[in-house]
Amino acid sequence: MKTIAFLFSAGLFSASGYADETLSVAMNESIVRIPTTVKTIFHTVVNKEMVVTQFKPAGEGRFPIAVILHGRSYRDRSKPERFRLLEASRYFLRRGFAVWVPTRLGYGDSGIEPDPEYTGSCSGKNYSPGYEAAAVSTLDVIEYAKKQNYVDPQRIVVVGQSYGGTTAISLAAKNIPGVIATVNFAGGGGGNPETQPEKPCRPDLLKELFGGYGKTARTPTLWIYTENDKYFGPVYPKQWFAEFQKQGGDAALGEYKALPAYGDNGHLFFSRGFQIWRPLVDEFLSRQGIAIPKSEGEYSISHFAKMEDVDSPPLNSQEAREKYAQFLKMDVPRAFAIGPKGEFGYASAIGAVQKALSICQNRANVPCQLYVVDDKMVWKRDE
Image (cartoon, rainbow, N blue to C red; front, side):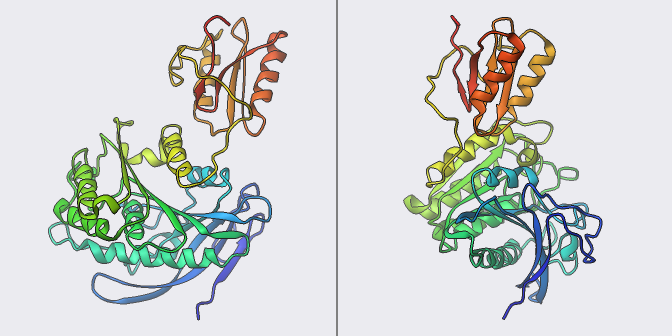
C-alpha cells in the first residue's frame, strides 16, 4: 500500500526543505510526495518518493484533472528544485482544472540519482525504458489525483514539453481510463542545442518509438513544434509524427501544428510563447468537450487589421501600443477598448468587456468602442 506524504499548503511553511518558500494562495498551491516504483535502463528497480506540486481552483469541484510534465536539462537536472510551470498551470486553473506538476525521479528535490530517465550514450541510445519510467511515475500521479474528492476522474488532460512531450504521447498509447487528450510540446529526446543543434541522437530510433506509440494510441493528441527548434530541428519531428500516424492509421487521433520560427530557439516555445499556443490548445481542448472561457455577448469579426499587429490600433502614444502588446499576452476572457482620440482601456477577467469600456471611458470622458474581444478583431473602420 502506497503512503502519500502531504508536505504543506499555501501560506504555510515546513521543515521539509521548503521552509523559506511561500506558496501561491491565489492558486491554492500545495506540495505532496507521491511514492513511485520504476526501472532504469540497467533494469535496476528504483522505489522513491517524487515531489509533486498541486494547484486547485476555488470551489468544491468536480474539476477536470491536468498533469503537466517537464522536460530534461542537458546541463543540470538539480534545478529547479521543484517544477511549478506556472504559466501553463494558470492556463488550466482558469479553465477549471485541478493541476498536478510532478518533479519526476532524476530531477530536483526528487533526487537526481539514480536517474531512471537516462537513455544511454548518443551512439548507444535505448529510448524506450526512459520514457516508460516517466510514464509509470506519471500514472502514479494520475491515480493519486483521481482519488481526490474534488475532481472528475473521467476528464484528464496530460501536457508535456520536450522529454515530457514524448511521455505524453507514450501515455496516449496506453489509453488510460479518463484521459481524454494529451498535448505534446516539442517532444523528442537526445537533443543538445550546443554540441549538435537540430541533430538529436539516433532520430531513427525515435521514429521507431513514436511509430510504436501510434500502433495503440486511441487518445486524441496535439503535437506542437516550431521550425527553429534547436534540439530537434524542423524535419525530424514531422517524420516522427508521420510514423505515428502511419502505424496507427485512421485510429491514431493525432494533429500536428508546425509553427514558424520563434525567438532564437523554438524549443522554448512552451515557456515563452503563451499568447501563440494558448488559442491552439483552446481550440483542441474545446473539441474534447472542455469549456473555454469567453466574454459574454456576441461580437462580429471585422477585417480592420490582424489582431496581433501592434501598429494597427488607432492609439495616441507609443506607451499605449506597448500596453496593447501586453494585452495580447493575456488570457481570455479579455477585451481592449479605444476612444475617439486614441484613449484606451483593457481587462482580462470575467466581465472584461465592461471593465475595458469603463476604463477607456474614464480616460476619454466619452463612450469608447471595442477593438478586440477575446480572440476576435471587432473594430469597425467607420467607428
